[in-house]
Length: 470
Length: 148
Image 1 (cartoon, each protein chain N blue to C red):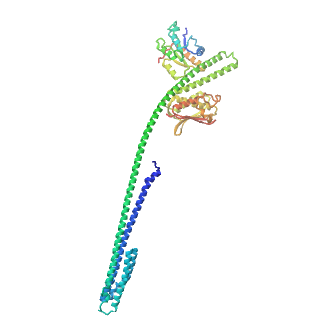
Image 2: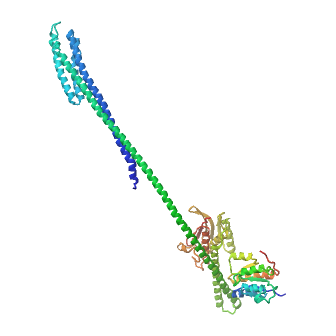
Image 3: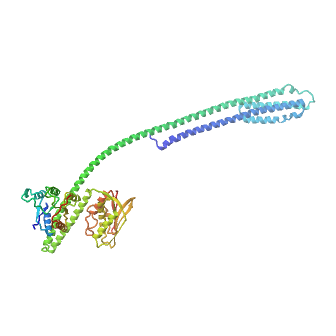
């Protein structure tokens, strides 16, 4: 069964918390029960001491009365006077403490009656003594032990209160002890349950994790195996495809090579014999005939250049590259010098970065820079102050070289044709060319693992960027 | 002084005519023997087959050799020339359409003395032939072959 994170949290966190809360509540309850027990202990003691106090007061009063009877000195009556009041207060207190316990209420009632009886007796005796002559016999009430009988009953009542209270206390404390025992057992049991729950879930989780881990391991192993199988298949496919591609390429190159060769021979014938015709029979041909011959020859020569470029392009893929370290800026300046020599009448401002150390095929890079720089020369032909620059910049954190001019530029909407073979964005009349140069550049840059692209705007010049992976 | 023969090995008739015209225009008036394929050229040089009547010691001044030839191709002809005691010092100029660097390298490796690419533009072709004639026929009367 899959548990959501919330369910899992609930199970592993909230359940123990709930159990703990119950345990805490039980503990609090048992503490309260125990404190009520200690309260009832205090109360029981107070009831007993109050009961004893009542007895003590009776005894004090009786002792005082006896002293008065014997000596007729009223000093002995000093504890007698407040006695009744104090006993009544004590009885009230007992009433409050007894919590309407039937036995206590009965005994308190008895004590009230006994107090009344004893007061009747003692007042009677005292008044007789007061009025009787000195050395006369103590009154009959005293001598017939009426007072002692009442006092015995009082003593009995007080003892009953004390013994009843102590039995009450015993019952109460055993009840409390029982409840405390139950709560302790409950807490213990809950603790056991909680512990078992936590241990159970821990074990379950560990087992589940272990199972998942084993399952993952198995799945990983299976996936790895599958991947290896696919890889092996891919490897095979790649080898087959590479082989096919290589032979297709070789065929294509051989075709291109022989076509270029065989196309050149008849062209040479056409041009050669046109030239012979012009030279040997030019004089007898009408002027228009010579013009036509000129057209034939310029057409042938253009085709010758196209074939040469095509041949050069096809040669690119077949030649082995040999990488070396050299300064691309130096090479650019060298080519720029050649271009200046070839176009002595033109003034072009050329700026170059001082150093551009690269690792590349020097011959191929010469072809790249020759193409880009001669394009720059060509397209700045109609600009009053031509400016061409070679430099290094950065794009997406990679070193990028560029050739920039302020020439005719091109329309970016035709960008897709820019690097295609025999594609031209300008008419031959505007700017001559075969349309192979940039295709060559692209091939070379690709062979170096780099990219070539351009940015331009009509009339605002063009910038050609290229990167080299090596 | 009898001018020595120039041997032109060329299968393309038009190229042959143009080469002959170029030689004439450059005032190279030596007789020119033309062979149409590699085998014929070897027969000529070693006085075999159709040329068995020829004097084997009468070697041409220079051989102008096309590379793409029927039967035996130009490079094989060159190898045979260099391997033979009699002809190993014979000046051989490769005259071809090929622009391939590898062809040039193989040519020199097999002992070609010079290498001329036949351009489409006739003006350049004439110039190339003229330079060739100046060096191998007029200036270098007794050529010393360069061994690879």
